[in-house]
Length: 193
Length: 244
Image (cartoon, rainbow over all chains, first blue to last red; front, side):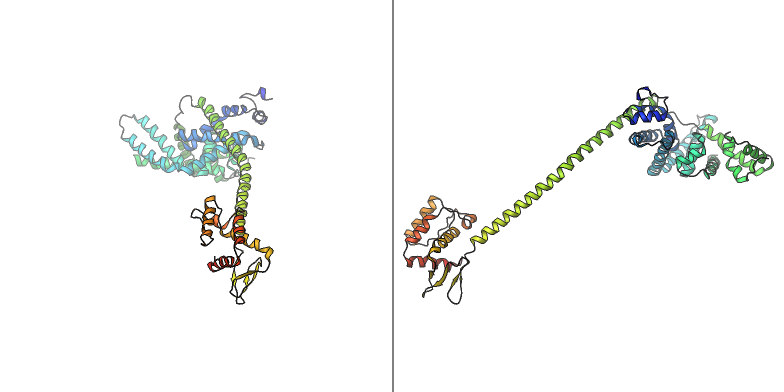
């Protein structure tokens, strides 16, 4: 079995091969999921270096725990769960919100005083910065639901499995996340004008 | 007839409706209907739609070129580093498992040896100090060996058991004389010849030498036996009076 696996092989086959002693089977898992996991984490922590660190931590953790993986849930759900938990822990631990917030405010005013920007570029940059800030201001649960539903386009039952909650309430979280982002955008744009 | 939905339920589904993620036809129809009849619901829809457009304009900067090509080797490096640490810890714990009981045994052995040595020292000290001379009111000299029981009219010691006399003298000389070199022996002999006190502890003798003498002193006994009873009593009185 282990001789025939490749990056397109079923997750179960890759895991079985790994458990049978083919350690290089793990490389296929990394290659298969690295982009998805990186971008998922990146949307949580926003910064590339943080996302890089957490991505590596997640795969390292996966390597250690893969032998004990029983397959009760799909592998990608298992990895996503780890990625979300690591990201949320990172945010809590490093208080990303507060530090990034200062950076964004200074960036907004820097951009505003830069007259060489055309209106469109200016609007786009301002917009992206304010949206970043708005996402960072979301409460933990809403942020997780927003990222998983909006960016990852996951069904609610999978989001519930990853976050360890029930499906009911996730739609409400998603709706309120949008509302908060929109109201924050309006508030910031009015300040800048 | 389609399912009925509350307005709150329809509101919560608005983001998915805007993103085109709703597959339930009844739900989709219910939202479409609500948008035509409920202005507040329509305003909410417009607001969310605007937010969605804004969010879609926002893009994350791409990671460095070749980032994903280098990610796997970096992860493998970390795994190898962790494995090395794990192996080191494993071998260290194995060594520790062996070393801990061995160290405990060694410490117990050292403790035991020290305890035994101390006991021997104390026992030696006690046995060497057993000859404690006490002069009671009846004029009897007592000691643990009961070698001398009586004194004469002058208060001098009288051996009651002649066969033990040798032992007593031997004990006394062992107790009071250090190990002697030839020079020391000569000194003692000279002192005796000059009628000086027989106890002549060498200046070079250590405390241990004083309290733990060995078996190399036969001459003193012989010399003592050669003395007449008056001289012997004199020496014994000297010893008695010394209260050593």
